[in-house]
Image (cartoon, rainbow, N blue to C red; front, side, top):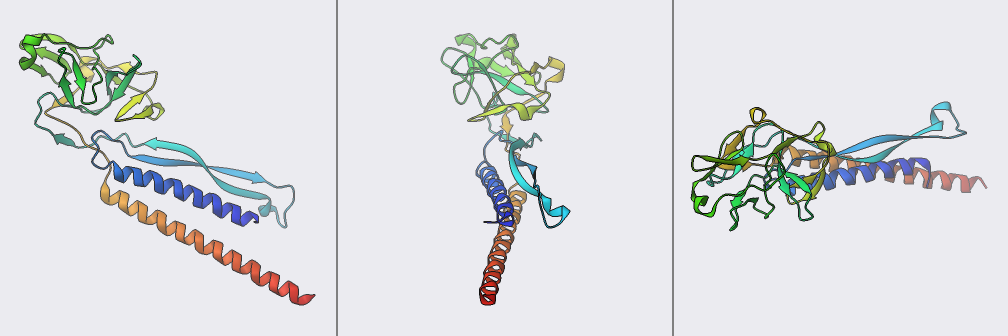
Length: 247
């Protein structure tokens, strides 16, 4: 296999990675709070000692570098539950992970546990500004509501305020599944910086038509690469045939 084949192979591997990411985006088009992913690639240049011409001494390959998230906000998706919330603007709700650490989510399905503690639909307890779970007295459960700045009310009495944490670079957060993320370096937003909308959650920000178009473009690029590979193989066969006749 010569250099041209290796270059085409690196390109096809990058296209496969792009297709996997696009397929995952399409699979999560209806997942609340999901942020569209985009594959990220770097150029890797290999310098050779010799070459027929100067330009032939440098070979460029595609290197899979990772993925970034489109952090644009999804649309409001009404649920009919007055406790469900959507964060309008940046930030993540703070939740208690199974190991006791703090996780983050934008999936605002909220329920009240039998203990009176507020939790996500997955059972992770929601935390306040001081990193403690928010609990409501059992006899006040029917009176619970959440205001636009995240304050949890039991009737007319404030119980605490939901912690909403912002990050300078959200792409540094690690995805843990089920809408949960982990990371460091976040700052709890003040009440004036927090804006919640109740009665629904944030929908996925994946645009199905755009994503489908992107998948078609990837497939066409792969087909072009396959044709180039076949043409190169045919060119080598013809060269070998001609050289064999010279002998």
